[in-house]
Length: 384
Image (tube, rainbow, N blue to C red; front, side):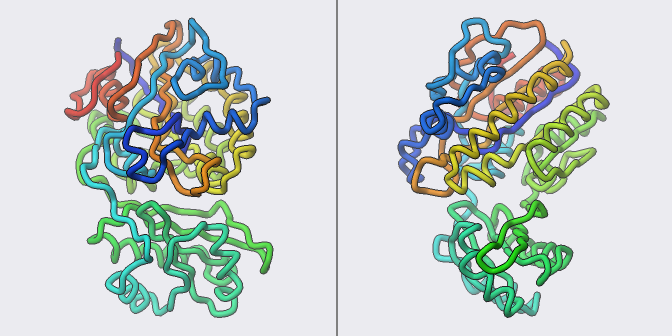
């Protein structure tokens, strides 16, 4: 099987059940999709079912379809961790042997002191926290003093929250660039700008988030496709996650609906290469906030949009939907969860088949590179 174009749609945070080592991460019992279906049993995902999502182990509650439109599987993450960056990098063929470092007690003086010295600003917080809770807790002091709020989570992230009327966006992004430079030797996965607006008691985060990731230390699928002279379009957080590496075009989006529209537009104008899309609302708005109803609404939103994307898919395309980790909104944790992720691989005119349990997310990159006639990266197994 050969094809000219691949489309990857990342349903950020949509896990389908705990991995065998989930207990090492405190995630035993996690099943993002399964628990959402339990919490919202009336939800119907007709187009996802037609593609075969209900055939995947861990998707109990969806109807299995014997002759699905797409081939289906669940994939295990080989990389250590459960981070957005490691998940996307592994999908692109880069497996990390060591997890990014985390900071359960806040960032050490060797990071905070140069940050405060170089920015001229004292920081508030410096502890693990929920993003919505910490602006509720420290937002009033931030507005009064102008000091940025620094916090982290169970992931390898240095997050800076600031009110847009206190620290303007350009200044906030500059603070993040400084933090990125300082944290690079410590291999912190991402520095994230977390702007917010509103008044005390009613602060809310805006869509002006930006991620500043480490650059991939090795070649990825994106680099290899770009070197072949083909377009590589990143939509949503893809530019941030790969630090711009391997992309010929980047399109930032504010929400899932905009991401879906930009995907459709790109499919209409880009006839070869790779279109790589991240839909972040599942994770950012609902998984981290333990909101299964919101997560279900977002899934329904994508389900209703899918016919437009499928109709734009050509016989020489490979259209893939998967995820980068879990983010179970029904567990006490508000962090990512170490889970299998679903895989749906659609080629128009082909009947889907069971692809089993894949040992690594890197099977996606191996399949795409081999399908495009390009040299693979040496990891993963193609499911052509």
